Amino acid sequence: MIFDYPVERQTRRHGPAGYTSYGQFRAWLRDEFTFRCIYCLKRETWGQVTGDYELDHFEPQSSNPELRLDYENLVYACRRCNLTKSAQKIENPLTLLCSERVSTLEDGTLETPDIETKRLILQLDLNSSNLKNWRILWMRIVELAERNNPELYDQIAGFPDLLPDLSTLRPPVNHRIEGINESWFARRERDELPRTY
Ligand SMILES: [Zn+2]
Image 1 (cartoon, rainbow, N blue to C red):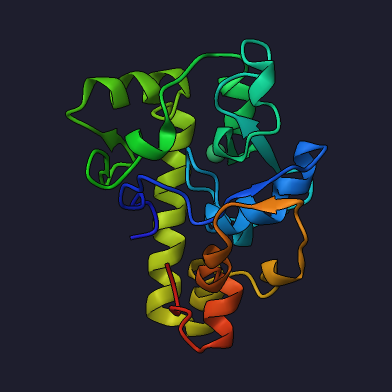
Image 2: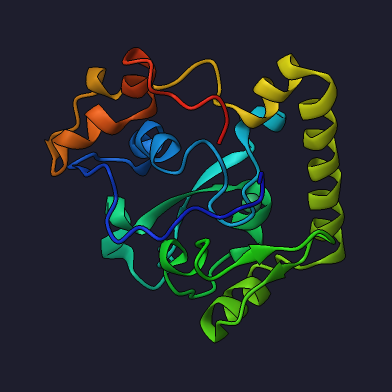
C-alpha cells in the first residue's frame, strides 16, 4: 500500500561524511529515503521535485549546530513537513515512523498504539484533515491506475526514471561503502528493482 511506512531500520545504508555543505548529501538522502518524504511519504513521482524536497536536520541546527553536517542527523522531507516541524525537537523518525508502529487507515488517518509516535504525529500535524484528504485522494488515484492504466500505475507507484548513481560521487569519507551496492541505481543495473514500492 502506497502509505505503508517502511520497516524499522536500525542503521542507514549509506554513510558519507566530510562534505562542507549539507546540500552535498542530497543524492545520498534521496536514495536512503527512497525518493519520498520520511514524514508524510509524499513521493517525488507525484509532482514537482525542485524546491519541494528539503534536507531536514531532525536535531534542529539551532540546538545542535555540531550535527549540521552529520549524515545521521539528516532526513529527506517535503517542504510542508519541514516547515511544520520547524525547530521542534522530535524523536528519531526512522524508529517511530515504521510499519511496526504506524498504520494508515482507509479514511486516511495514521493510527498508532505508541505514545512517542503519537507525539510525533501531533508535532508534524500528520493527521490534519488536509493531509487525511490528501491520502484518500492518492489512494484512489493509485487504485484506479492499478486497475485501468498500468503505465500510469508504474509511474506513480514505481521509482523515478532518473536514479542517482552513487558510485560516481566522491565524498571525502564513506563509512558504509558497501551501501552503494544496495542503492536503487545499482539494483536496477542488476535487474533487481521492484516494479513498485
Ligand atoms: Zn512530507
